[in-house]
Image (cartoon, rainbow, N blue to C red):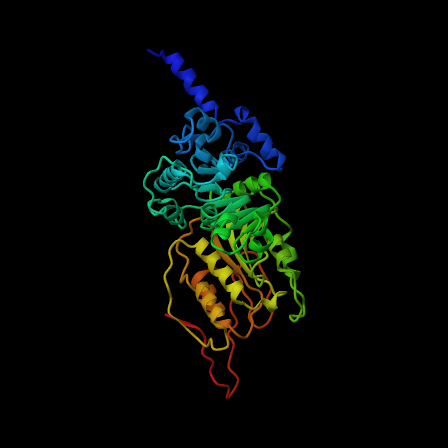
Length: 457
């Protein structure tokens, strides 16, 4: 009969087989590519000694064709590390710092998604849903795994809940995904459904990998030909691009902090400079990002999708330690006019900040707009009013100039959806920090026909 001491030693030995110290070959291969191991990234994401792992003893469902000892060494945790931990507990306390963590391990079967891999993800998502925990996921991997021979019955993956349950978290808790290296197929689907999507410069993201593309008769492509970060950042798939995994983990912790509470230690620029922030001649453009950086606390502005929909700037910031979401026109791009990309970007941003929404009835003259622009604008006005934010942000809009066309839509958007930070009419107004400025009522000229503005019921 095994003694408790022997059982404990066996347990520690078995758990140790999934650690980097016992997987030197895989660790050296990752470092040779300039990447970090999954557990090195895990240490960067979590507070020290706070991670509690779920399913550490799992292996790939391939016992029918591989030795179990080999599976323990070659497929530890079935290619995904899941658990709960604290993030930023030193700033916000242990209760507010609780988070669920999912780290795909590319050194295990190229990070592919197997039977127990999915079971582990399903379990941690269920825990996050019940306990309302934010989730950080590192989504590197090659998608579905065909080699799990222990699973006798397959229904084309339709029995899995990973994708639907992950998407269902959006609007309930903050979800942040990080892509590095190859992120294809199912891994890319999980990445794309996150609220905030971060990618490193060495990322390739696509809904199909090279094998699937070639199998579909579309030709042979290298993995680096599929969804490079330069393309995905310009089409709005990626919110933030960083240099490497270390910076991505640090940025994920910072973004999560915006939903955790206020900072008591903060500093900002001299707010009196805002008086002269705009040019005296209203026909001249100005740099709105400099104004935002002046308004916000130092090192607190995080701009989302900076290379997509440039006419609209969206992002997160802090004012006196409090978290805010900001949306601003950039008058240097299309004169600040909203095109299809900018409307889609703004609409997605409002969805991110708003938990409860419903379709409004929208009427107006849209004949001069293309079909794509109309659909994007409908996305922009999808939220009727801001009720509650999954991230807990206060939403402000920064509007310093009004264009003649579409002014009614902007007035509706700011009056019904957003608290007004600063608002300008057809002429320039002074800007006060956190000051709501009275709208200027535009009068019709004599004998001028009445224009039909966008009316909402």
